[in-house]
Amino acid sequence: MNTNIKTLFSCLIFIFGSQIGKAQTPKLIWEINKIDLGTILEEQGPVTAEFKFTHTQDSIFVIEKVYTDCGCTTVDFTQDSLKVGEKGSVIVSLDPSSAAGFFSRMIVVKGNLAGTSDTLFIEGTAIPYPQNPELEYPKKQQGVGFRLDKVNMGDVFTNEPKIKEIEFYNFSKKTLNSKQFQYKGPEHIQLSMEYDSVRSNERGILKLVYYGDKKNDLGFFEDQFQFSFRNGEEISLEIIANIFEYFPPFSREELGSVANLSISPVEIDLKEIPANEIVNKTVSLTNKGKEILEIRKVQGNCNCLTLSLPKTQINPGETVELQITFDPKGRKGIDQRNIYIFSNDPLNPVQSLILKSRVK
Image 1 (cartoon, rainbow, N blue to C red):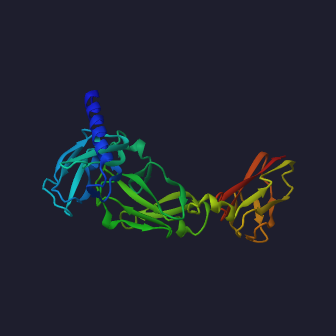
Image 2: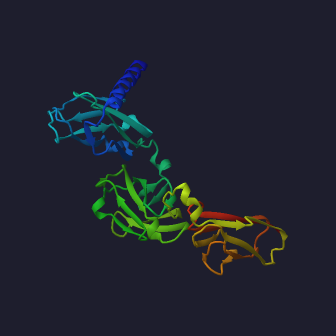
Image 3: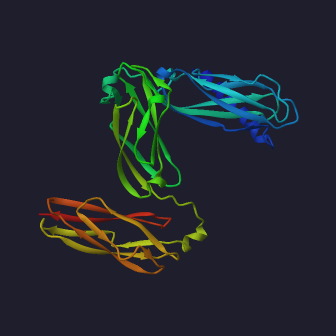
């Protein structure tokens, strides 16, 4: 797109935006004004997104023009005149061969009535066809290649599932069909095939949904799940995730009334210790809030740590001692252990303390 076209499009947005600002009530009610197309593979061809609206004014409405900010998008829209309460749509088609990586495209819909100028968006990630599939999808199982053999979900919260799309390349000579797809894995993970079929030397997408609440635990986890595109040809992948409890926002006035965890000390330096000497330490956990503090979980980053609490519910103003036992057997040199404490403190639901040493 040259500079003149960009300037013209910017002017149109400014003018139409000014008209919208002056309008007292919306003329069109859109079901949604942004659509995430997700991951788009070049070989799958153009993808479409449909925006639906309802006309709310007494006057007859007609879409006069739809502007796009890129030649990679084409549009089709309702041509009929609409009366109050009638519905229409704008269908946007994107050519993925013209994009690489994340994209966001803007569409401006201009109507015949004053103030009927609305902005829509489509976004997603376009992935070009690989020049060297063997190099880009090196992790092969049963004739199917993946970029990695481990899926990193990052942070997952208990209030909503997290979705990730996994690319794969069909190196086999057979077409992979979604009707034959079978998943075998833990209940908190769901897996499905996005396309009806993926032919030989084409790519597909697996949609992975991770339910943090169904895991019924907190902290860092590694899981395995299996699936197959054909009977008996099982594929296994690993998945890692950090699961955190979700706490809804609260007001400043509520800040003083919630549970509040205070840890002392937050760092313990054991100095120099022999490898055959087991060390015991204590850390104080105090509830400085006005509600009962619930310790959901205490987790160390090593099997060399043994952690115990006399109770998991701490009353306001109460202090309990966390017992820490560290066995440095088999270790040598500078060592650092991390201990994570999960609680119902909404301001700091996960806190950590450090145990340092030099093992000789």
